[in-house]
Length: 289
Image (cartoon, one colour):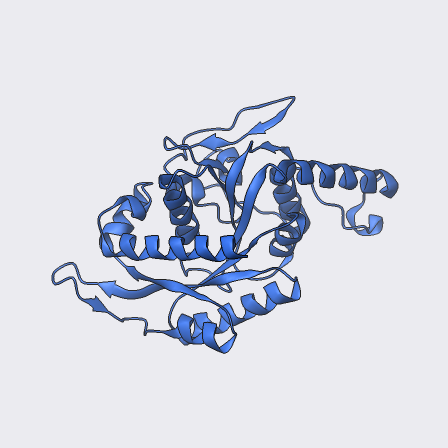
């Protein structure tokens, strides 16, 4: 993967002329614009902290849109924690490449995906990269991967608001917005507020907030128990004047499905029902914009 130049030759030790690097960046930007122009909607999924189910939301948003007949792609932007291949059940496949670029990996349902996880020798291999190199990999996924014509490209960003997140969000021309994921408890909601502020600073539209793990569905009585509290995401959305997209409960059926590489929305469970409502709301929001 190409490493993004920091613009400081003393720090990176490069012997190449910075004017050449600038020219290469301009060429890559042109490739990104051309690639992204073939995609109707580009949506990033963000979270202020890890462990809130951001990748789960990305995968099930993609799977629901796919089930509705849309052509969908998923870019795994979480370079240091690439989970999308396993969650979509295609972690044993390696991408093909030729002079025309890298070809995305397709699920049996037709969802196109790309992840650094496809290039690792095994699941236990860590990515020990500094920010510029990881950011460069994201840019290369945007410029060199043959996504083709899509209705939606969903980008699973890493948690927080650092180098990789900024590079990803700023590199995508005409990005349609971000979906912010939180869990109900106050610590997570606090970080979700930071994600809202980050998106506003970057002048990127906010589609809305999803409250994940909004209660646990008891497998015995089907009652929803609010083990993490309730309503934190909805309260934050009101305070920040951001749309609240909905609440997804924890469901054992959904967890088992995800571990097997099967999106929860393909299952008959309460979490699936609620997630489909969220997706319909997302569609209403972006089409209205």
